[in-house]
Image (cartoon, rainbow, N blue to C red; front, top):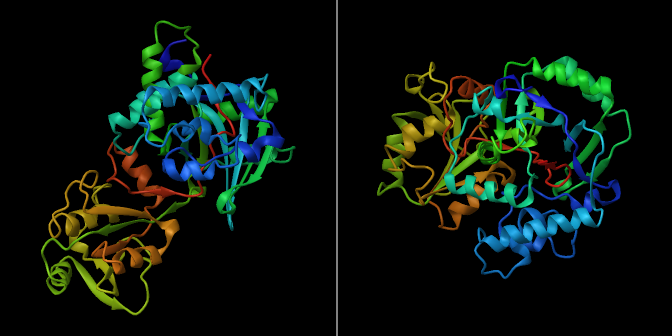
Length: 415
Protein backbone atom coordinates (compact mmCIF):
# COMPACT_ATOMS: atom_id res chain seq x y z
CA UNK A 1 0.00 0.00 0.00
CA UNK A 2 1.43 3.40 -0.94
CA UNK A 3 1.75 6.01 1.80
CA UNK A 4 -0.75 8.30 0.07
CA UNK A 5 -3.41 5.59 0.00
CA UNK A 6 -3.24 4.75 3.70
CA UNK A 7 -6.43 5.37 5.69
CA UNK A 8 -6.56 8.48 7.86
CA UNK A 9 -7.00 6.36 10.97
CA UNK A 10 -7.08 2.65 11.67
CA UNK A 11 -7.75 0.25 14.57
CA UNK A 12 -4.86 -1.26 16.53
CA UNK A 13 -4.06 -3.81 19.23
CA UNK A 14 -3.88 -1.57 22.27
CA UNK A 15 -1.55 -2.27 25.16
CA UNK A 16 -3.41 -1.36 28.34
CA UNK A 17 -3.67 -2.15 32.04
CA UNK A 18 -6.11 -4.59 33.54
CA UNK A 19 -9.20 -2.80 34.76
CA UNK A 20 -8.17 -3.43 38.36
CA UNK A 21 -4.80 -1.75 37.77
CA UNK A 22 -5.96 1.18 35.61
CA UNK A 23 -6.14 3.69 38.46
CA UNK A 24 -2.70 2.68 39.72
CA UNK A 25 -1.15 2.92 36.24
CA UNK A 26 -2.74 6.11 34.84
CA UNK A 27 -0.52 9.18 35.05
CA UNK A 28 -0.53 12.80 33.86
CA UNK A 29 1.13 13.50 30.48
CA UNK A 30 4.92 13.48 30.64
CA UNK A 31 5.21 17.22 29.95
CA UNK A 32 2.74 18.41 32.60
CA UNK A 33 4.84 17.59 35.67
CA UNK A 34 8.42 18.59 36.43
CA UNK A 35 10.78 15.76 37.33
CA UNK A 36 10.54 16.64 41.02
CA UNK A 37 6.75 16.82 40.89
CA UNK A 38 6.71 13.43 39.15
CA UNK A 39 9.06 11.99 41.76
CA UNK A 40 6.69 13.08 44.52
CA UNK A 41 3.60 11.91 42.64
CA UNK A 42 5.07 8.41 42.17
CA UNK A 43 5.91 7.84 45.85
CA UNK A 44 4.22 4.61 46.96
CA UNK A 45 2.90 4.12 43.43
CA UNK A 46 5.09 1.41 41.90
CA UNK A 47 2.70 0.87 38.96
CA UNK A 48 2.44 4.54 38.00
CA UNK A 49 3.20 5.11 34.34
CA UNK A 50 5.46 7.97 35.46
CA UNK A 51 8.10 5.25 35.92
CA UNK A 52 7.95 4.86 32.12
CA UNK A 53 7.23 8.39 30.91
CA UNK A 54 9.63 10.11 33.33
CA UNK A 55 12.03 7.37 34.31
CA UNK A 56 14.57 9.84 35.69
CA UNK A 57 12.50 9.64 38.90
CA UNK A 58 14.04 6.18 39.47
CA UNK A 59 17.61 7.48 39.09
CA UNK A 60 19.71 9.89 41.19
CA UNK A 61 18.27 13.44 41.17
CA UNK A 62 21.35 14.89 39.46
CA UNK A 63 21.08 12.65 36.38
CA UNK A 64 20.67 14.38 33.02
CA UNK A 65 17.03 13.82 32.09
CA UNK A 66 18.05 13.04 28.51
CA UNK A 67 20.91 10.70 29.37
CA UNK A 68 20.91 7.22 27.76
CA UNK A 69 20.35 5.57 31.14
CA UNK A 70 17.02 7.40 31.49
CA UNK A 71 15.65 5.90 28.27
CA UNK A 72 17.10 2.52 29.21
CA UNK A 73 15.37 2.64 32.59
CA UNK A 74 12.13 3.66 30.90
CA UNK A 75 12.36 0.61 28.63
CA UNK A 76 13.21 -1.65 31.57
CA UNK A 77 10.20 -0.42 33.56
CA UNK A 78 7.93 -0.74 30.55
CA UNK A 79 9.06 -4.28 29.86
CA UNK A 80 8.57 -5.25 33.50
CA UNK A 81 4.97 -4.00 33.41
CA UNK A 82 4.35 -6.16 30.35
CA UNK A 83 6.16 -9.23 31.69
CA UNK A 84 4.27 -9.14 34.99
CA UNK A 85 0.92 -8.76 33.25
CA UNK A 86 0.18 -5.25 34.49
CA UNK A 87 -0.03 -4.23 30.83
CA UNK A 88 -1.63 -6.60 28.34
CA UNK A 89 -2.08 -6.27 24.61
CA UNK A 90 -5.54 -6.80 23.17
CA UNK A 91 -5.70 -9.79 20.83
CA UNK A 92 -8.02 -8.13 18.32
CA UNK A 93 -7.43 -4.74 16.73
CA UNK A 94 -10.02 -2.16 17.57
CA UNK A 95 -10.75 1.35 18.70
CA UNK A 96 -11.56 2.72 22.14
CA UNK A 97 -14.12 5.27 23.26
CA UNK A 98 -12.55 7.66 25.79
CA UNK A 99 -14.68 9.90 27.99
CA UNK A 100 -13.31 12.71 30.13
CA UNK A 101 -15.41 14.37 32.82
CA UNK A 102 -14.23 17.49 34.66
CA UNK A 103 -16.97 19.02 36.76
CA UNK A 104 -19.86 19.76 34.42
CA UNK A 105 -17.68 19.40 31.33
CA UNK A 106 -17.89 16.11 29.40
CA UNK A 107 -16.09 15.12 26.22
CA UNK A 108 -16.23 11.79 24.38
CA UNK A 109 -13.66 10.87 21.77
CA UNK A 110 -11.97 8.02 19.91
CA UNK A 111 -8.62 6.37 20.62
CA UNK A 112 -7.09 5.34 17.29
CA UNK A 113 -3.81 5.43 15.43
CA UNK A 114 -3.56 8.17 12.83
CA UNK A 115 -1.66 8.19 9.57
CA UNK A 116 1.87 9.58 9.42
CA UNK A 117 1.35 10.16 5.69
CA UNK A 118 -1.68 12.33 6.48
CA UNK A 119 0.41 14.23 9.02
CA UNK A 120 3.26 14.72 6.56
CA UNK A 121 0.87 15.96 3.84
CA UNK A 122 -0.91 18.32 6.28
CA UNK A 123 -4.21 16.48 6.15
CA UNK A 124 -3.59 16.24 9.89
CA UNK A 125 -2.99 19.92 10.44
CA UNK A 126 -0.55 21.65 12.73
CA UNK A 127 -0.62 25.08 14.35
CA UNK A 128 2.70 25.21 16.23
CA UNK A 129 6.41 25.14 15.53
CA UNK A 130 8.37 22.39 17.27
CA UNK A 131 11.78 22.43 18.91
CA UNK A 132 14.38 19.92 17.68
CA UNK A 133 15.57 19.09 21.20
CA UNK A 134 12.04 18.18 22.31
CA UNK A 135 11.52 16.13 19.16
CA UNK A 136 14.81 14.32 19.84
CA UNK A 137 13.62 13.41 23.34
CA UNK A 138 10.39 11.86 22.04
CA UNK A 139 12.21 10.02 19.23
CA UNK A 140 14.56 8.42 21.77
CA UNK A 141 11.62 7.48 23.98
CA UNK A 142 9.70 5.82 21.13
CA UNK A 143 12.77 3.93 19.95
CA UNK A 144 13.69 2.80 23.46
CA UNK A 145 10.21 1.39 24.11
CA UNK A 146 9.39 0.40 20.52
CA UNK A 147 6.02 1.92 21.37
CA UNK A 148 4.13 5.20 21.45
CA UNK A 149 2.80 5.80 24.94
CA UNK A 150 1.80 9.45 24.92
CA UNK A 151 -1.31 10.06 22.78
CA UNK A 152 -1.59 13.10 20.54
CA UNK A 153 -4.75 15.12 21.16
CA UNK A 154 -6.61 15.66 17.88
CA UNK A 155 -9.86 17.38 16.94
CA UNK A 156 -12.33 16.73 14.15
CA UNK A 157 -15.25 18.74 12.81
CA UNK A 158 -18.43 17.74 14.61
CA UNK A 159 -20.10 14.66 13.14
CA UNK A 160 -23.40 13.38 14.60
CA UNK A 161 -22.85 9.88 13.18
CA UNK A 162 -19.52 9.55 14.98
CA UNK A 163 -21.10 10.86 18.15
CA UNK A 164 -23.84 8.23 17.97
CA UNK A 165 -21.36 5.43 17.34
CA UNK A 166 -19.26 6.41 20.34
CA UNK A 167 -22.27 6.83 22.59
CA UNK A 168 -23.37 3.34 21.61
CA UNK A 169 -19.94 2.04 22.67
CA UNK A 170 -20.40 3.56 26.13
CA UNK A 171 -23.40 1.28 26.72
CA UNK A 172 -21.00 -1.63 27.20
CA UNK A 173 -18.74 -2.47 30.13
CA UNK A 174 -15.82 -0.07 30.56
CA UNK A 175 -12.31 -1.53 30.42
CA UNK A 176 -11.00 1.34 32.59
CA UNK A 177 -12.82 3.75 34.88
CA UNK A 178 -10.96 5.95 37.34
CA UNK A 179 -10.93 9.37 38.92
CA UNK A 180 -7.49 10.94 38.78
CA UNK A 181 -5.91 13.85 40.61
CA UNK A 182 -7.99 16.98 40.32
CA UNK A 183 -11.20 14.98 40.27
CA UNK A 184 -11.04 14.26 36.54
CA UNK A 185 -12.76 11.02 35.56
CA UNK A 186 -11.32 8.90 32.76
CA UNK A 187 -13.42 6.08 31.30
CA UNK A 188 -12.46 3.77 28.45
CA UNK A 189 -14.51 1.29 26.41
CA UNK A 190 -13.12 -1.17 23.85
CA UNK A 191 -14.69 -1.18 20.37
CA UNK A 192 -13.67 -4.42 18.68
CA UNK A 193 -16.80 -5.66 16.92
CA UNK A 194 -16.35 -5.78 13.16
CA UNK A 195 -19.36 -3.65 12.29
CA UNK A 196 -18.57 -0.91 14.80
CA UNK A 197 -14.93 -0.76 13.73
CA UNK A 198 -15.84 -0.62 10.04
CA UNK A 199 -18.41 2.14 10.49
CA UNK A 200 -16.05 4.29 12.56
CA UNK A 201 -13.23 3.75 10.06
CA UNK A 202 -15.42 4.71 7.11
CA UNK A 203 -16.70 7.84 8.80
CA UNK A 204 -13.29 9.15 9.83
CA UNK A 205 -11.55 8.21 6.61
CA UNK A 206 -14.07 10.34 4.71
CA UNK A 207 -13.10 13.42 6.73
CA UNK A 208 -11.03 15.99 4.85
CA UNK A 209 -8.79 16.78 7.81
CA UNK A 210 -7.99 16.42 11.49
CA UNK A 211 -6.36 19.05 13.72
CA UNK A 212 -3.57 18.68 16.26
CA UNK A 213 -4.71 20.30 19.49
CA UNK A 214 -1.86 19.17 21.74
CA UNK A 215 1.10 16.92 20.99
CA UNK A 216 3.05 18.57 18.17
CA UNK A 217 6.36 17.16 19.42
CA UNK A 218 4.93 13.64 19.84
CA UNK A 219 3.52 13.62 16.31
CA UNK A 220 6.69 15.12 14.81
CA UNK A 221 8.76 12.49 16.60
CA UNK A 222 6.52 9.70 15.33
CA UNK A 223 6.98 11.02 11.79
CA UNK A 224 10.75 10.95 12.20
CA UNK A 225 10.70 7.39 13.55
CA UNK A 226 8.52 6.29 10.61
CA UNK A 227 10.86 7.94 8.10
CA UNK A 228 13.92 6.28 9.68
CA UNK A 229 12.29 2.85 9.57
CA UNK A 230 10.78 3.21 6.12
CA UNK A 231 12.38 0.96 3.55
CA UNK A 232 13.72 -1.50 6.08
CA UNK A 233 10.40 -2.80 7.40
CA UNK A 234 7.19 -4.13 5.89
CA UNK A 235 4.99 -1.69 4.00
CA UNK A 236 2.25 -2.13 6.57
CA UNK A 237 4.54 -1.27 9.46
CA UNK A 238 2.67 0.11 12.46
CA UNK A 239 5.27 2.89 12.75
CA UNK A 240 3.40 4.58 9.89
CA UNK A 241 0.69 5.51 12.43
CA UNK A 242 0.76 7.43 15.70
CA UNK A 243 -1.30 7.08 18.86
CA UNK A 244 -4.13 9.63 19.01
CA UNK A 245 -7.27 10.54 20.90
CA UNK A 246 -9.70 12.42 18.66
CA UNK A 247 -12.53 14.60 20.00
CA UNK A 248 -15.18 16.68 18.23
CA UNK A 249 -14.08 20.32 18.10
CA UNK A 250 -17.15 21.59 19.93
CA UNK A 251 -16.32 19.46 22.97
CA UNK A 252 -12.73 20.63 23.28
CA UNK A 253 -12.14 22.94 26.21
CA UNK A 254 -9.43 25.57 25.78
CA UNK A 255 -8.57 27.56 28.88
CA UNK A 256 -6.86 30.91 29.12
CA UNK A 257 -3.08 30.96 28.88
CA UNK A 258 -2.03 34.09 30.72
CA UNK A 259 1.15 36.19 30.65
CA UNK A 260 3.29 37.73 33.39
CA UNK A 261 6.23 40.07 32.73
CA UNK A 262 9.12 40.89 35.07
CA UNK A 263 9.48 44.62 34.38
CA UNK A 264 7.96 47.51 32.43
CA UNK A 265 10.95 48.01 30.15
CA UNK A 266 12.06 51.16 31.93
CA UNK A 267 8.63 52.82 31.82
CA UNK A 268 6.81 54.15 34.86
CA UNK A 269 3.36 52.74 35.53
CA UNK A 270 1.78 56.01 34.40
CA UNK A 271 3.77 56.10 31.15
CA UNK A 272 3.00 52.44 30.51
CA UNK A 273 -0.74 53.01 30.95
CA UNK A 274 -0.63 56.05 28.68
CA UNK A 275 1.14 54.08 25.96
CA UNK A 276 -1.39 51.24 26.22
CA UNK A 277 -4.25 53.74 25.94
CA UNK A 278 -3.17 54.49 22.37
CA UNK A 279 -3.77 50.83 21.47
CA UNK A 280 -6.50 49.65 23.88
CA UNK A 281 -9.21 51.46 25.76
CA UNK A 282 -8.24 51.24 29.42
CA UNK A 283 -10.84 51.06 32.19
CA UNK A 284 -9.99 50.56 35.90
CA UNK A 285 -11.84 47.68 37.54
CA UNK A 286 -12.70 47.13 41.18
CA UNK A 287 -12.68 43.36 40.56
CA UNK A 288 -10.32 40.93 38.84
CA UNK A 289 -10.92 41.01 35.09
CA UNK A 290 -11.68 37.70 33.42
CA UNK A 291 -12.19 38.62 29.73
CA UNK A 292 -15.69 37.87 28.50
CA UNK A 293 -14.90 37.78 24.77
CA UNK A 294 -12.19 38.14 22.15
CA UNK A 295 -10.65 41.58 21.89
CA UNK A 296 -10.64 42.03 25.67
CA UNK A 297 -7.94 41.22 28.21
CA UNK A 298 -7.40 41.94 31.89
CA UNK A 299 -4.28 43.59 33.26
CA UNK A 300 -3.01 43.57 36.84
CA UNK A 301 -0.57 46.39 37.53
CA UNK A 302 0.44 48.15 40.71
CA UNK A 303 -2.07 46.26 42.82
CA UNK A 304 -5.01 47.19 40.58
CA UNK A 305 -6.99 45.55 37.76
CA UNK A 306 -7.75 47.14 34.40
CA UNK A 307 -10.00 46.04 31.54
CA UNK A 308 -8.30 46.48 28.17
CA UNK A 309 -10.27 46.42 24.92
CA UNK A 310 -8.31 46.58 21.70
CA UNK A 311 -9.09 49.52 19.44
CA UNK A 312 -10.73 48.15 16.25
CA UNK A 313 -8.29 49.83 13.89
CA UNK A 314 -5.49 47.81 15.48
CA UNK A 315 -6.99 44.45 14.43
CA UNK A 316 -6.05 42.79 11.12
CA UNK A 317 -9.33 40.89 10.77
CA UNK A 318 -8.40 39.09 7.54
CA UNK A 319 -5.29 37.49 9.06
CA UNK A 320 -6.16 34.42 11.18
CA UNK A 321 -2.96 34.71 13.23
CA UNK A 322 -2.65 38.47 13.73
CA UNK A 323 -6.28 38.81 14.88
CA UNK A 324 -5.74 36.40 17.79
CA UNK A 325 -5.79 38.05 21.20
CA UNK A 326 -2.36 36.61 22.03
CA UNK A 327 -0.98 38.08 18.79
CA UNK A 328 -2.54 41.48 19.46
CA UNK A 329 -1.01 41.58 22.93
CA UNK A 330 2.39 40.67 21.47
CA UNK A 331 2.19 43.18 18.60
CA UNK A 332 0.64 46.06 20.51
CA UNK A 333 2.15 45.80 24.01
CA UNK A 334 4.79 43.12 24.57
CA UNK A 335 6.91 44.03 21.56
CA UNK A 336 6.67 47.81 21.10
CA UNK A 337 6.28 48.79 24.77
CA UNK A 338 8.19 46.10 26.67
CA UNK A 339 10.72 44.97 24.07
CA UNK A 340 9.68 41.31 24.23
CA UNK A 341 9.79 39.96 20.69
CA UNK A 342 10.79 36.30 21.19
CA UNK A 343 8.21 34.71 23.46
CA UNK A 344 10.01 31.36 23.31
CA UNK A 345 13.35 32.55 24.64
CA UNK A 346 12.88 35.86 26.47
CA UNK A 347 13.28 35.17 30.19
CA UNK A 348 11.39 38.33 31.15
CA UNK A 349 8.06 36.70 30.30
CA UNK A 350 6.36 33.66 31.80
CA UNK A 351 3.07 31.90 31.13
CA UNK A 352 0.39 30.81 33.58
CA UNK A 353 -2.24 28.22 32.69
CA UNK A 354 -5.81 29.20 33.45
CA UNK A 355 -6.31 26.31 35.88
CA UNK A 356 -4.27 28.33 38.39
CA UNK A 357 -6.79 31.18 38.33
CA UNK A 358 -6.46 34.97 38.41
CA UNK A 359 -5.26 34.82 42.01
CA UNK A 360 -2.00 33.32 40.73
CA UNK A 361 -1.48 36.37 38.51
CA UNK A 362 -2.02 38.66 41.50
CA UNK A 363 0.37 36.60 43.59
CA UNK A 364 3.16 36.74 41.01
CA UNK A 365 2.89 40.54 40.77
CA UNK A 366 2.28 41.25 44.46
CA UNK A 367 5.35 39.21 45.39
CA UNK A 368 7.54 41.54 43.34
CA UNK A 369 8.63 38.70 41.08
CA UNK A 370 6.65 40.19 38.19
CA UNK A 371 5.64 43.75 37.34
CA UNK A 372 2.49 43.17 35.29
CA UNK A 373 0.12 40.34 34.42
CA UNK A 374 -2.29 39.90 31.53
CA UNK A 375 -5.41 37.72 31.75
CA UNK A 376 -6.31 36.43 28.30
CA UNK A 377 -9.57 35.25 26.76
CA UNK A 378 -9.20 31.57 25.78
CA UNK A 379 -8.38 31.11 22.11
CA UNK A 380 -11.56 29.77 20.44
CA UNK A 381 -11.23 26.35 18.82
CA UNK A 382 -12.53 27.81 15.56
CA UNK A 383 -9.61 30.25 15.50
CA UNK A 384 -7.11 27.42 16.01
CA UNK A 385 -8.66 25.52 13.10
CA UNK A 386 -8.63 28.65 10.91
CA UNK A 387 -4.91 29.13 11.55
CA UNK A 388 -4.20 25.46 10.76
CA UNK A 389 -6.34 25.59 7.60
CA UNK A 390 -4.32 28.62 6.44
CA UNK A 391 -1.09 26.68 6.92
CA UNK A 392 0.09 29.15 9.55
CA UNK A 393 1.29 28.77 13.14
CA UNK A 394 0.05 30.34 16.33
CA UNK A 395 2.22 32.33 18.75
CA UNK A 396 3.81 30.29 21.56
CA UNK A 397 1.60 29.39 24.51
CA UNK A 398 -1.66 30.22 22.74
CA UNK A 399 -3.75 27.31 24.00
CA UNK A 400 -4.11 25.31 27.19
CA UNK A 401 -6.39 22.30 26.88
CA UNK A 402 -8.20 20.87 29.88
CA UNK A 403 -8.89 18.21 30.93
CA UNK A 404 -5.65 16.44 30.05
CA UNK A 405 -5.45 12.89 28.72
CA UNK A 406 -3.90 10.20 30.90
CA UNK A 407 -0.70 8.41 29.95
CA UNK A 408 -0.66 4.64 30.30
CA UNK A 409 -4.32 3.81 29.64
CA UNK A 410 -3.59 2.73 26.04
CA UNK A 411 -0.24 2.44 24.26
CA UNK A 412 0.61 1.61 20.65
CA UNK A 413 3.26 -1.08 20.20
CA UNK A 414 5.31 -0.84 17.00
CA UNK A 415 5.48 -4.30 15.45
